[in-house]
Length: 429
Image 1 (cartoon, one colour):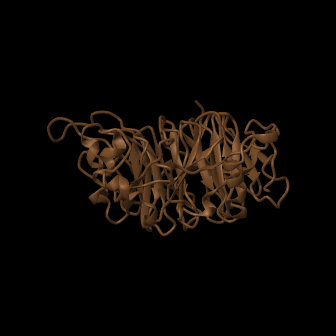
Image 2 (cartoon, rainbow, N blue to C red):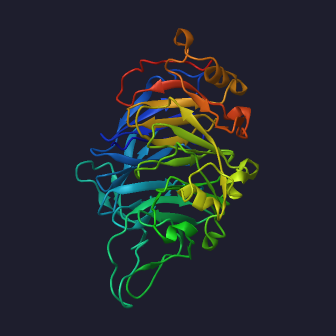
Image 3 (tube, rainbow, N blue to C red):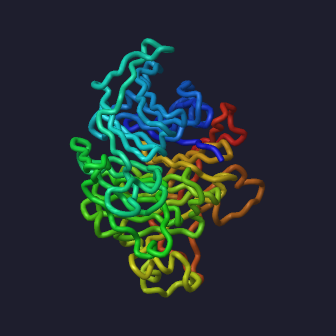
């Protein structure tokens, strides 16, 4: 199992791909720009350990990488040089994120159970001994024991360290965190991290959990926040995506999304919301990626009414008894192994990466004509070779509600993160 990750620039159609060797590759996702998606635009050495997350600043000027070496590196993309090392975590850094309106403020979370706030303008500890041109920073705020539950009488210490697996900025100046052991969100104000007398940090809000998690709790893989900051989507280890109102966290999830091919078997599987907020994409341990329309009109009312073909007592049927469940489509023939990360580009294309060492770019072109052709016209003359498409569900002889023709994605190209040119090199048709 590898830690291949990716993220998209916010202004330019570049995609940054990180791998377990610590390298970053920039790839051009625009089909009209050279060198295209089949070859890396530039390779940037960043760490000597696996990269777990990448974040790009609002102006595409800086890139931050979270790594298994317990450090975060901030790089100037234009000059391709490392400017800052953020040193404070004592275990692998799981995620890092620039504040949406700032290129100086970052938040991070780690397996050490903490979340940290960094300011590139402050808390300079000194210069790197090995690289004197790089400034080293300490955090300006620390959320300690971010998701720990106390055991025993009041005043005793935490039961154990709880890994903080996901983090995302929400409404202005606040961020959300999630952990490995429970499907709860905690909201924090970066300007005022308060602590009790035992040193434990106090969140602004703690969310409710899905009702069916009373029997068995599940952790959260990733948090994706809608562009308007009103909604947060969490990919949970029970292989269900839950949608939360950022100002109503304490009431628990508002609705959910599910597909039979969505399997979040490891914490490496991530999700992402499209720039327009209309689609949510997830990876999957099944080797496929899933896409869900976020509009409520696409919810499967039959599930909510419990008129379903799922086995009695199955997890999704239990969920549907309490909240509405939305359905989506699966991107078939995407990859051969676990799809670990997904990212929407600024132009609305979807990029997926997997443990098969391939990254693929999916385009919503031609109103879904190409994808429909792939679905309906078979393998004749090898026409499907090297291609994938959105597979629409069939139920009781009728097609499910299709989100739109635009949801029929077809891959525009393929890229090998190991540096080689893809053996399957398609341009968008």
